[in-house]
Amino acid sequence: MNKRGAALIICYMVIAALILLASAFLTRSISERSVTGKYFDSTQAFWLAEAGLNKAIFELRTSYDGYPTSISGSLSSVQGEYSATITSDANDRIVTASGFIPSASAVKTKRVIVATMIKRTPTGFYDNAIYSAGGVSIGSDCEVNGDVISGGTVTGNVEEGYDITQNDTTLHNNGLPLLSFDQLQQKSIDQGWYNPITHATTYPIDSFWYEAPSESNPTGTPNVVFVNGDFTLVGGQQVVKGFIVVGGNTVYDAEIGGNASIDGCLYTRGNIWMHGGGGNIINVNGGIWAGGTTTMTGNEQIDFNQDYMDAIEGLGINADVQVISWRETQNTY
Image 1 (cartoon, rainbow, N blue to C red):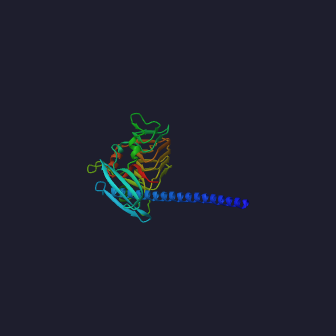
Image 2: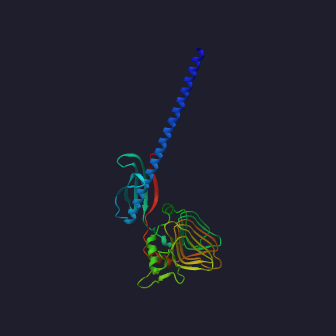
Image 3: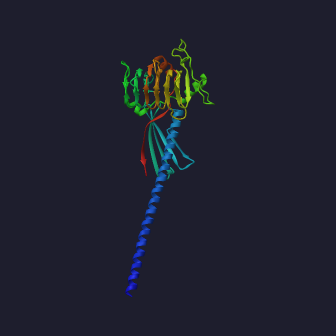
């Protein structure tokens, strides 16, 4: 009888231990499922907030001054809703975008993004031999005749008499002004340098000028050469003339090497790398703009050309709307 009682007690103890283990596993499983669900909802709410932000950018690019103050909508791929409000702060536009799961009227999860946007070309943008949102590296055998402005560190020498501005806070916040690719591409198409069907680019070799300065056109009109992809100009003493715009649907880089040179100006939202050069060839007679870094290695020379810059400024190209600051104010996960 004592043995049977002891066995029964042991059985009860084993059952109790199994119940405790099962409860622990069940609790953990429920907790993990809850966390996973919250993470899933939070991620979708963030996507919805981004959708609201992108919709606001679209509206501002359509009309920077006549924008709607309130936007709302949904995505077919996400079960939820978004909203965005647009307010002005001088020339800046402040967008507050929210994503809601499952809806704005029955909020289970919410994410909020606040972004500041601008649409402007800064004063003095056309007055520099090098304008680079990233760092500028000038090799010991390179020569820069003109002002240099950079959002990073400038290493190397610029010829005496010209200014160097490094770690510029405006460039840190704004980066490279986004000149309208649509306008630039259309001008290149109108001038016959870019084929929108084949995406092929023809490079001018005779002159920077599409229309030379005259009494009726004091600044003149440059050849606008739109490149839908990476721009590479290497060797063979090649010379390209005009305003070279390296564009497309993403950020592209530009490379100049060997004895190649540009009689004009180069604009890219990516990086610029110049290497080689040789002799007394002027690698760039005009100026360069880079959304990334500018690197000069070898024997290059950049000479600022005010006439060319005045002609490019005279094109009247608008700046696209761009985000200069971004932060999330609410994350429920």
